[in-house]
Length: 239
Image (cartoon, rainbow, N blue to C red; front, top):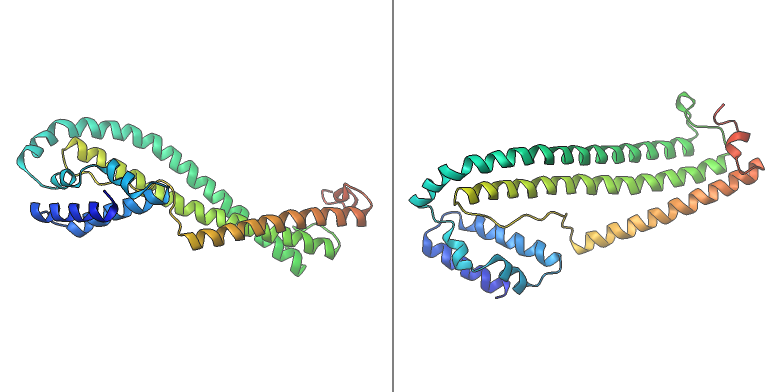
């Protein structure tokens, strides 16, 4: 069964069952197809894994037996999820802290590059060096800033996606314990369209190449001017 056939069967089954919020339910399954197909699965494989759309539609029908089961299982499932939430929260905090560090590196690199080019030496933070070396180091810092900025933005977006994905997992676990409707899982990894993905890839590659070339060139030029491979000692950077 392909995507169109699956969605049509699901829609017809939901309509026949008199389920409310049909558009919201269909939107969830549409999104599930999109991210699974982006991961390389075919429409038929996604449909097969989801199961019979007629059976899926039945879970959205509210009836009395479900309320009885809800009282038995919900407490223990909630207790187990509470312990899991503590562990997951630690992971999320670590990930968020890592993204903040990357953001700080991006801002610091951009600031250093601008200060080197403009010859601004606030509080004597920039070490003494010939201007041509400073320009090359500035280019390297700015390229690094672009790399770190893209990484930080991607990290924030991925962090948000992880929260959405875990929230759906959490909700589905409680729904299963209550015999309520279970929605398809949310994507764990960030979904980026093809054009934007290519643009980011080119930008990252170009920034990386510029960073490496500028840094190596700056080192060689500085060593030549100072007549020493350890030019930072000649220019007394750490005195």
